[in-house]
Image 1 (cartoon, each protein chain N blue to C red):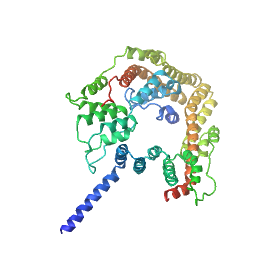
Image 2 (cartoon, chains in turn purple, yellow):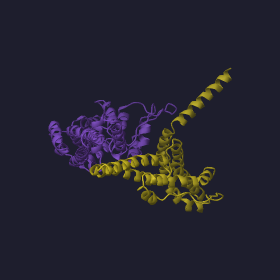
Image 3 (cartoon, helix red, strand yellow):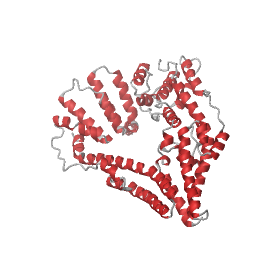
Image 4 (cartoon, each protein chain N blue to C red):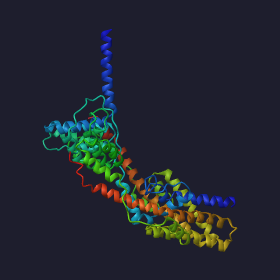
Amino acid sequence: MNIRGSLLVAVLFFAAVMAPGASGQGVSFSKPGWPAVHGPFSWADYVMNTSSIARSGGIYQLRENTLDVFTPTFSIVRYDASAHQARQLNLEFFSYALGSQLYEDAAGLLFADSLYNPSDTLDYLQGVVCYDIHDFTRAADCFARIPECSPYYSQASGFLDVWTSTPIVDYKKSPLLAGAMSAVIPGSGKIYAGDLRSGVSTFLIVGALGAMMAESAHKLGWQDWRTIALTSVFGVFYIGNIYGSAVSVSVIRNTYQDAQKASLLFDLHIPLHQF
Amino acid sequence: MLRKLLYCSICIFLCTSFSALAQDPRLSASLCEVAYWECADKAGRDSLLMEKASYLALAGDFGQAYETLGRISNFGLSADERADLLRRKMIYLYSDGRMDEFCGMLDEAAQYGLLDGVSLEGRPGHRSENAALILSVLPGAGLAYAGDWGNAIKYFLVDGSIIALGVGAFSSGLYAATFMGGGMLLYTTLPRSTEMAVEAASAYNSRALKEYYAPLYESLRSF
């Protein structure tokens, strides 16, 4: 490819990186369940998965809602309370604070260093606050510290049972078949995996790039720099489509599992707030 | 010698106490909430909420400081106390950048005489969000109008390059490339730049209002 071809590809990529789908809008791939973007093919898949068509899809929405559930509303800060006098844990106050949704106050007090003496009650209250602000990992840590002899043990272990369980979902699809299907008809693997909108988005984008490449090859020939540039872009998106279809099977399975776990955590029939 | 030692230890104690308080105003705010819950007297509870709001403001959480003051009922407060409450609320709203709500309190502030002696010069600058929206048809123009020159140049170059590529492709007889490729890329960049232009216009208006009411804010703080 000559220098003009390289320049065109660079401009096209730069322009596409500026696109909303790829500039951080929508889902963040650092969160669990989504594959990380670590190369041009996964990047191309990311662009196709975050187009406006794909974003309106049920799987995307489910993923977004589930990620919201698993995202803490704020991060807990451990304050140094050594200058303050140690206090007695007042359960009624914390019942009031949690009931009034004063979570930052409750968390600030409960996690302050040396404000309250360590006890199973403190661990339990810390766990409940973390549960309320959706910091489930920290809640699990707090509940795991509660000894068996504690009156809070049954409630804490009830939460831990749900948290550590892996929901069984009725979803059996083959990543290999999804990839193979997308190699024949772009996007069809994603439709097979269960994400219709993302499949349509992939088909349209790869199809458009394919049409552009074919037109260029027909009119200008394969040796022309414009054809080479368009073929390069098409190639990246075509392989990205196969890669994305294979990965989408595990993404969708994770999405269903996370969604089921989120609903289990919120339908907990354990009276966590009774203390 | 003993006296010096005593002075030193008192100084160290005071310094550590104050630095601890200064380090964690958020924790002090939470402790105020505990005291509020324990207090039975309305005046005492109100002053604790005021104190909590001050600590929250010290922690930089002006939004929550304002919400905390919102929990104080005007019922039973004297005119001076109401004026002071309103003054604090306006300070927190201004600091939080919630200028629409701040402006909504101006009439009430005038009734309490909080605007007396404050001279506001000219009129606040304004950028129409609708104009920003319409101007965004031209790459970067909406953003430039709204004062966001950095993004205006960026989108001018990006969209300009796409249009130039489209023209180049069209002149080469590549019609599919022109309409599909150019259209696809413009579709992904133009709506985003339009959205940003509208947001920038709104931010400009908020900034302009903040600048315009800065003398009032200083006056409220100096009361």
